Length: 196
Image (cartoon, rainbow, N blue to C red; front, side, top):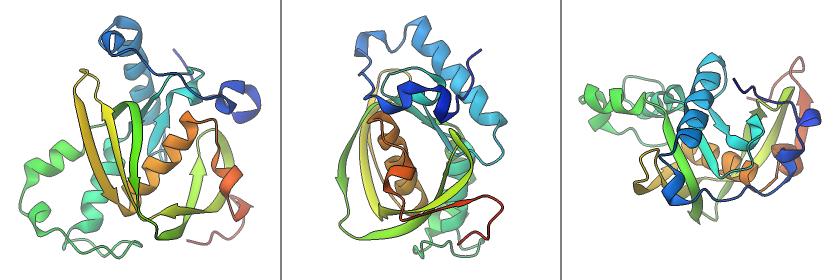
């Protein structure tokens, strides 16, 4: 079983990840990698996503936790206080529990491409499972669109704003050998007062 490797023990975090051949997506090695990454992410109380380089695999793959997707849905729901991102609530989510169930599943992004980002940026509070005990403020585009393949090799395009757009950008950086600390305007220890 793989583990999430800390920055100082993982040189792969500083390399550009390689694409996964589409014909290999359904092979045992890639499917096992996806399952192991999902299992690792499930164990993380505050982890919202995980990129393959974080577990020592230099391939273009990341997973977003169903918990994070549900948080995004709840943040937009009129039954939940507005999120930090001040998005308008999506009333359809409050009356469609099936949509919430779908959004509570992990999402797999294979060979993702960031195809569009908004010009408007906001500083986001950010941490990383590869850099424990630290947090930072990172300027991120408010909206982002990603094109990728899922775990079955099906192509899809997903646009997002707020929290999910923030996750897209953090994970795409991992695939380019970039850590949030490279872009942060401020970094502080977990025990410090956080600027939430």
